[in-house]
Amino acid sequence: MARIAIWAVGVLGLALASGARADEPARRVELKVGSQQVFRVDGLKRISIGEKGVVDIKALGKNRFILFARKEGTASLLLFRRGDRVETWSVQVHSERIERFKADCARLLGADACAAFPVTSSGGKLVLGGRAADLEAYHALRRLKKAFPDMVIMTSVDPSVLDGLVRAINEELARHGIRTARMTRVGERLLIEGTVEDEAEKSKVEAIVKGLYDSALGEGR
Image (tube, rainbow, N blue to C red; front, side, top):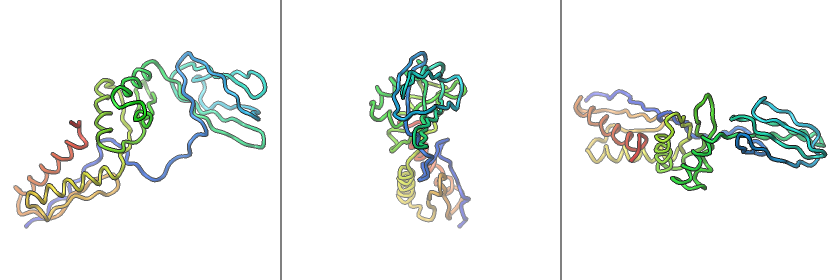
């Protein structure tokens, strides 16, 4: 009986969701290129823009200002208010391409589901973020990618989804009479190790694992 080599697979370019999260901005604003919007903030003293050229700001008097969306991108605003309070706003300026994507996503997943997957633009590519709570949502997003070939998917997968895949693989191995090789999850990697009778059984283990892995986290059904 020979020991099977550790066989590791990543998560196909996905970021594994973790408990740590960056601080959220106090407010998110979405604008279309060429649009404008007026805002009122009580106790406003001044505003600082982190990224130049995405939006312009014009004061409209006490506590009011207008944002002009100039080009696609994201800008961070710091709003200084009375009482030494500071708010961070994230302003996302969308192009028509992003609006088309949002419409396609809503048709496929529904507007509520799409709200969990914010889309931005970076380096001329659409970048999809957020978190996929199940494989069905992930596969739906991959189908969207076919309509937008330049899209970069940075969607997180809930660890419970990967744990379910581990259970399914181990059940399939047991069903084929293989009980000395097991799949485990270590962080964002899936590992299989153990012992097999010979190279033929090793090939069977790898075929089972690859088949279930590809059907779950590959292109989907």
